[in-house]
Length: 294
Ligand SMILES: [Zn+2]
Image (cartoon, rainbow, N blue to C red; front, top):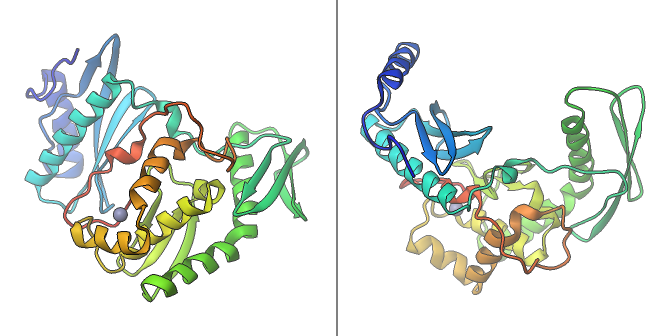
């Protein structure tokens, strides 16, 4: 059950929009400021971003729709409506689970394999936050802090990223040499909650931290996908033809990623879980004519 969707905002939302309009010195969309789906009511928030893509996310009971401020107003409104209706549909179908928005977290005694390299994580309480890696053992000491878990996660990520960085770069360069021979500026690993990878206009490539724990062919697929964006920005037929030339079974790999990707690294890079998984946020990334994210 959806209330107020696509109807001009209620009095309350008009007032809010007016406030926002003053703050941003431009009018906002007249779209509902909340929707009720089943028994839950979700606040709907709009924000203008400097990103190149529009996105929708569900967090703390609110749907936040982020639209690039550089787009013309009519396009921003059209995309906002579209993203909102897709968000609602996915919540209704139980396909959009806020749990998936969590960043990668780790625990004491965890064993992980990243690009074939083994890691054991040990954690103990200390006076401050510190990490060191000896051989394959990542030792974390942590202190009491309201953001303790986040701090621990970022330390572990940093240690694994440091250890894997050269392997990953080598792999990107190998695949680039083999298929594209594109000039690449930078390769970065990010713990993104919305993207598997991206390729900027100046050919800087970023890859999702979770990919490091997945089977090689999945990581390769995302690398190839981003490298192909150095030739074509969008996801048109010529882009996919290029991907297909490098990876003929890319559709299978995409399907695998969509089904299993957000469970990693928790499940470790062992095999694809058989259970049906949730649809992911990546589905919500709106791709305008020129885009670079995947
Ligand atoms: Zn892409």
